[in-house]
Image (cartoon, rainbow over the protein chains, first blue to last red):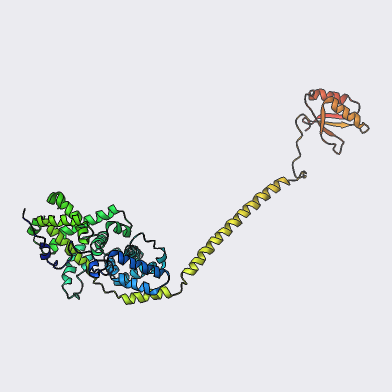
Length: 230
Length: 211
């Protein structure tokens, strides 16, 4: 069997300089890797817990800090459920409204980010249910196929992602986002979605199989190349 | 396309490890094994590259424009606003519980008063008979006896005792008594005969035979 040097990963389109096995996962807060933030998970969680304690004491500044820290990650997460900006903003605010009122009841059973993400997920489902909406199904029609206002090279990546996520159910998109986008473990995803770990694992597996079958085509690989990869 | 048929056990293991290796949460020995496998397996190498790209794409900020400052301003306004919406709800909720408790107490009191009234009514039933009520039926075998006006009470009692009779009613306006045999008294006919034989008895007849 021919040996394929590891650097082949870096020659894949869009992979230059991208995360590899040695690079930590991105975080919920900003989408940047923890290494880039130079801040271990435990330190981040300790800071968040301190902010929650201050919020429980009525400190608005702590709330503002937590809000700004998580706003970007939450918006991206919720965009896997709905593409409506007004609704995402409302869900984020509902999430922090609850976090503000329940800050003193956080017992530290999970990371603060997991706790907040779980609140946001439930708020998102509730908001969609109250409006009679379903999580977006025509994902690719909206993701990356809108007006081309994204001039940088990320646009191609967004387009590729949007077309791939089009083939997933909303639950599968959420699991993929939490595992690959946020960097949660299966246990954390189960806690966020309030589902058994086995269910989460199955959703992730099926999502990965679908993406494996669709993404190479979307990347422009020929059927022969796909066959070789298989 | 399935993993097992195309890649074997090593590829399946690589498939399981990839997400966590990308997260840098997989154990170092697994990462090392994976990198070794990727160097030998083109399919898994391509799959890992694709998943790396997927992770990069998912890490991009959302393309939906959402103003954090505006959202934060609205949130703070919401927090600072008084809570007129919740207070009445709480008040209504506690009021509702109080109303239910009072209603239950009133209901129990009503039931108790009703039960007590029925009991008192039954206990205080009158021991008299009105004219509109049907006459009390005499017991079977009763006799109507009219003693003479000059008959002494001692003689009357002695006669009744001797014949085994007991007065159950009377005397009425005509001076008649209703008497019934007690215990193993003789037959009505014999009693009637002996009553009629007494000189102080004006009338003796069976009430059952009276039309």
